[in-house]
Length: 125
Image 1 (tube, rainbow, N blue to C red):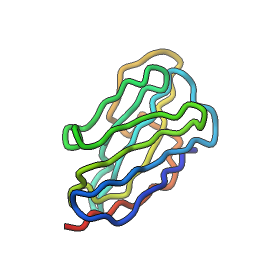
Image 2: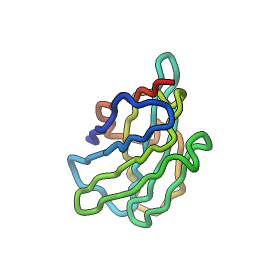
Image 3: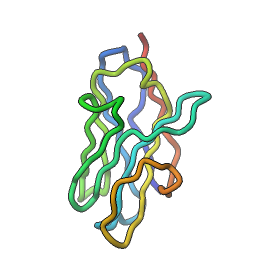
Image 4: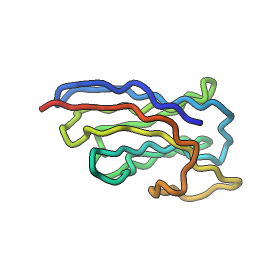
């Protein structure tokens, strides 16, 4: 299971760094994704990283503001969020997309597993 942490309350324009820690091994073709869910909204894709190559993909709404990185020894992934906006307020989750072979990125939550408890990010305007 993956566990997200690092959320909190921040003013608009501020920054937060979320961390996603895995309780089990991450394999080379796996992807680690970040999603978020605002109150009353569906779960939304935010960003994803390829564990082996480090390639990344972002939702258009966070491009240029968020970055995602991996820490191989710690088997963890970080989501650096800069320039936060009130619309970024949500519970943030990380999850893993297992694959036995290289595969294109997916933004669909149903293709990910090992969801843990999320971490609340609240941006005040």
